[in-house]
Image 1 (cartoon, rainbow, N blue to C red):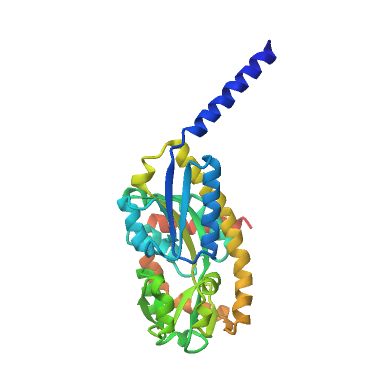
Image 2: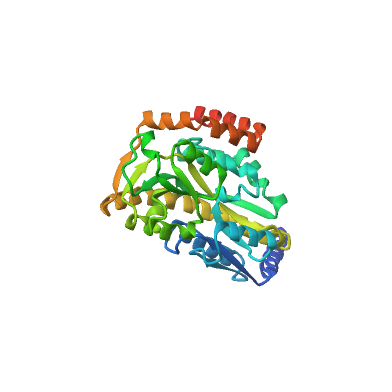
Length: 335
């Protein structure tokens, strides 16, 4: 009798599960990103798409649209707010105009390594910063990794602080980046990423700063000679969803998207880190002249950026700044 009851209960649960799976509505999800298809961004978005389609039995289909075909990060963010686009992944730095707390991630030399990055971004500080987007019309799901940013230019090797003087350097459209590189002596020029290769090729700018992976995938080595390993900022990406669209989804649909974003996050971080090691070797093989900034010179740069850090602390809120510093102390003590 008990066996029959158990089998009957199991059949009901299985039937309920089938019905639930069939309850997903047919949907097309446009997922925009800025890099080329064959990049760490592109690979992670494609994995995300597979996870979503598998979990919904193909009812929810993700269209991965790269190469900034849906516009720059800032244009896609506005499309999300207006409900004209469903999803994107892009730099947190371009979200600062929408949620000032995002500037926390632009703080120079805030994070020392990837272990600290994962713990901080996936912990209470990361959650608090991510939540500031929702009242503005964007739901932040998870952080993916762009990586540690490094400097390239066409004028000369940067081995000391004074070498920054006069370099016309493309930076993101973000005040922390503008203020930081101005403080270091560069002529900082804000430009969308989609315009960067042409600006380097035509010598409208002398240099730029991005992780090794982006330098390779965007072929900046074709138009840049010198690479300095500075690791001056750990740069995350944010997987974001239009709140207007998100609020129209069922709880099950929201869970599918969040779970897929987390699965793709874990894949993307490993992929990005593996690729970064290979990318640096590739850049050397392709003829870029590579040098690493010494600890002493990195310290001199930090000293020049004290006022920038104070401004960041003021803009993101002193409570959040203190919580971040306290959290980093805990993370570093837990080695």
